[in-house]
Structures are given as structure tokens and as C-alpha cells.
Length: 382
Image (cartoon, rainbow, N blue to C red; front, side, top):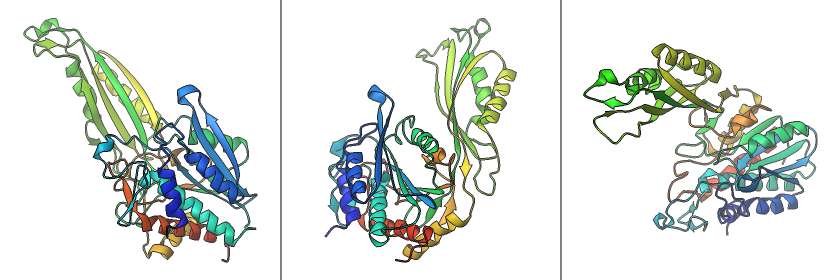
């Protein structure tokens, strides 16, 4: 017999909620949470094709206030013929749950709901507030999802004391790792202009590639610092160079390059931009840099809330999880602006891959962990 957590994970996977399509996933959660006594608010932001549906749900009032956060949108499946099982079928085979979003992160969302269901059954008059913050825009541009929900929470005096995001944080097995911070992300498209000409007559041309190579030196596969107590070194990498030039005997008129910097709290985005633009100016010539800051670095230092998370994980799995700030960005970058935040979810080895899957038993154990967190956070005797 399937557990409530696994059954809900299957039902969520069967909702084709590829960003930014809601696909029925939030409708399903609205029904389940409403039945548990949650007040549910559906919040849509953006218009037309960019419209994104989101969900806020809460039960109880006052403090303490604990929130779970996650997303029901998923990345595209790619070629469905390459999948062993229907990517939106939620197949349970040999103890594994297959489907797009199984790891990232419908399995964790199902565990949220199962955990709060068990908790409110046992403690129907619990103190404080339990919230769920669910977006449909984590895998996309993230313009109309959690960032807007955070604004809504702030303006409606609905700010948690702590929030746990259910991203798949574990490299190999459940219980290994909590993410208590993330690096920032700064991207640039750098265009350098010159004068087109024949390679045999370089004195009649101005090769922009020569200057571009010098400009890219500080960001071409480099480490920008030695890291600190919470973060590894900041890193910079060139990701594309393009002249649009198919001829081997022509010096191009312009060249463009893309690069990205993943930076820790030793830097700010403005500081990095200022440093690099000063460097570009010293190289000289005509250039234009278009910058995009998609995330700022943050860290939640060890403290009582992280101790609750770590102790609950160890109680269920027998493992003492490490704290880490590795990996890419997540919606925790928005939540950290209103309250302390950490991330803990399933094993992420197959996320975004063909035949994405998780161990079904891990969903039940994750629900047990989330339930133990609630009991410890609210000091409930169950």
C-alpha cells in the first residue's frame, strides 16, 4: 500500500507543470491543504504568457512561525522517447519513483504536505503558524514567483521566523547535507568593437579579439579569492565567444563573449562590476558590457534553528549532515531577505536528467524528517 507522501508525489508528477504552466499541481495542493485546515491564497503575478500561479497556505496564527518553501514547476523533459517511463506518469518501479520533478522537487513538496498532515492530526491545536510557500516559477526566470511572494508576505505581516526550502541537497544519500547559504551569480555579455580587414594587412584593421582576450584574463577559469569560513573560492568562467565570422582570412569587426562569476561574501556584485569595468577601460578601445545579477550571496550561520534541522535529520537517518554553500542558486536567495533560511530535500543525482527518479522510501523518510522538525520547532509532545 502506498504511503500518503508517495501517493501525493505520484499525483504531483502526473501534473505536467513545465514552467510556467501550473498543470494542476497547485490545484491539487490547494485541495489537500484546505482539507488540513490551512487558509490557502492563490497569487498570480505577471500577465499573458508570462503569468505565473503561486500558492500561499498557512495554519494557525502568531509565533513561532515555521515555513516550508518549494516549487511545483519543472524543466522540460527533452525527448520523451528516451525515457524508460512516462515522464509524467509517476511510475513506481523496483522501489524507485520515476518522473519529471521526482527529485526537483515534487517529492519534497509531497513530503511537506504529509508531514504537516501527520503533525496537525497529532497536534490539532498547535501553537504558532505553519506556512507553505509554493511557486510555479523556480525553474524559469524567477520574476513572478518566490520574489513576489516574499513581497506579499512582507506587506501582509506574514514573515516566518525560519524557512526550510525542499531543494534536493543530498549528493548521494538522504541525510548528508544541508545548504545554509548560496553564492551569488553575476553574468556579463561583453562586446568589443574593432575594424574589419584582411589578415594579410593587419595594420589596416583593428582586431577586437586581441583586446577581448586581455579583457577576459581575470575571468577565464580563475579563482578570485581563497574562500572564507562559510564559502569556497569565488570562481569565474568564460562560457561563449562569438565573432559571427565564417572566413579564415578576415579580421572581424566585433567580437562578443559571455562569462559568469559565482561569488561568495568576500565580494559584492557592484564591486566586481566596478573592478572589471576599470580593467576593460585600461585595455582600451570600444567595448560594451551588459551585466545581469541573478543572485547575491547569503549565509545562515549556525544557530538554534539550524540545530533543530540537523538534530531532526540525525534522529531519523542516523547521520550528522554537513553544512554547505555549494551548488547553484535557489529561491532561498529571495527568502533570506525576510528571514533565516536553509535547504534540505531529497538526493539530487538525477534532477533535470532523463529518467529522473528517487528512492520512494526516501520520500517517506523525508516526510518523517520534516515532521520531526515541526515537533522540535514547536516543542510539541506527540
